[in-house]
Amino acid sequence: MSVDADWLAPDWRIAGVGALMTSRAGGVSTGRYASMNLGASVGDDAGAVAANRARLAEATGVAPVYLRQVHGTRVVRIGAGDAAAGAPVHEADAAVTTEAGVACVVQAADCLPVLLAAPGGRAVAAAHAGWRGLAAGIVEAAVEAVCVAGKCRPGEVVAWLGACIGPGAFEVGANVVLAFGARPEAESGATGRFRPKGRAKWLADLPGLARDRLDTAGVAQIGGGAWCTVADSSRFFSFRRDGVTGRMAAAVWIVGH
Image (cartoon, rainbow, N blue to C red; front, top):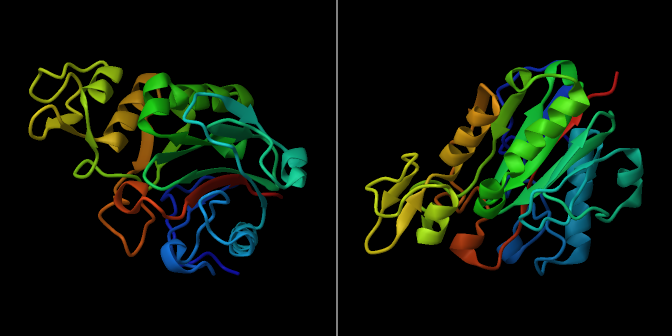
């Protein structure tokens, strides 16, 4: 199976690195999960999920390693042993690897996937950044892990932001504004990533907040982040929009030689 034409891919050209993010297209699931649902615990038929995961593995040519995501800041280093285990063995929200043949994978249906690569494909990582994890430091933790594993500086790391809930749809309360160090009483928040919407509500720019965190961490090469999962129901799953829905996956891997 080739990569589905509807899936997303970074516009980077890094030797030795492959990366993509799935969309709804290209799978066998039906109904609310149609068609490329990769979430194993969202109510979809287990056989359909297994078939979809097999299609992702075939399309990438490597073994995807899935995580039990908990909106935290833990980063795990993965390898061939994790792929052989089949079911997720790590409770974490980011994975890093220096081994070819396995893919760091995060799932999302509104949260922001962040893919990272060190120069020459020496290390890659994928992070799951909902607002809680992003505010707590998951992106910074993933950047540090890539730099340690890939023996490089943050300025050498390339980052790509996948599809997530967009700034026109992500309505939040004051708790989210405060979590990012902005002041709810300010017109647009301390970072300019929040726009007031009615009484005690704001529209948050999740990709923008991630870019701020990456920039502060020293990452200068940042792409992606232009797709809204809520706005495009034909292309993306969205938990905020639909409640019961599937999960997409963003994956990054080192290409074997």
